[in-house]
Length: 374
Image (tube, rainbow, N blue to C red; front, side, top):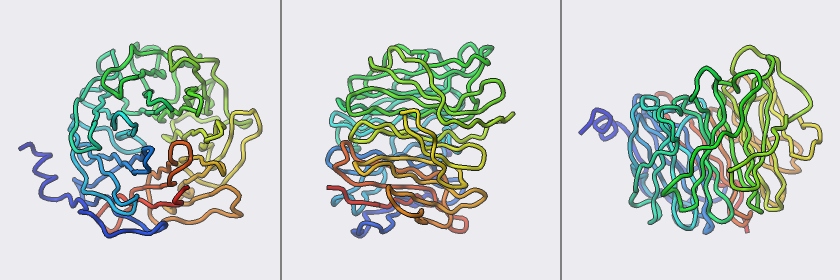
């Protein structure tokens, strides 16, 4: 048994099947203390409304799934390990849950490769990993995203280090067989100034028509602004990159805060991101961005009602949630980190948020159903 495995076995506390929870109540997914605390939860919902969570513990990757209509969780199951699993500041595993397979992707700093595992039995057994990047070691920055399309297609994007003298660029690869194999890598974007923002994670989403959208923080002539580009052919080619928002952020550093984007059931694209000390909401129609609050680490999901955004207050650990049409944001937690939010495919299922929460020396991952859906 490896050192990591011994630590996990002796220290990490994984939740057994919890008592049924009502919508709005917190569900604890996993908890533990250093050096085996669970970190960086990511969410996916399948068409049946089952909640799937991927997270890291040390060098190990775990998956947990909800039971009883999303009101309790089965004990998390270990997927695999990778040397020096990339965790923290939006690094960590990503997850997609389709009808063919559940797919989890993660990067290890030591080997610098983006790896994907898949399960065809709801997360009970896992196959893989397979390597997504076809230039070895060049995903070593540890920042990536994964999106799933309406037909189950998958696409990963990451900060790529190949041809290091050209700086970090956005690369991607797709899968049409549930993560079993991945396409040749495709250059999505290269900055005219030499490198995109070096430590901000990219994001990706499909809309209801299968159009793929990718967002990243750029670095052009000293400005760290958000850009996005779209593909009509599953990531083989991308259109011109477009700047989001009418303001700009001159900054000679990386804020390590890449925002997020999503598409509504109606096909509308929504983005949430940070500029300086503020969080903004924007669409793809060229309209001015909407300031939400002083904040950081925003994440976004969309239902038929519109965009739902979570973020942390600036200089605070308070987790805030803004729903469409609400007069003001709601506090979800007093001490949180790296929150995420996800809606069901087609908007027919639940709306769910998850985050890290510290209680003394213990870190726990918690999940809350914000709306039950149809």
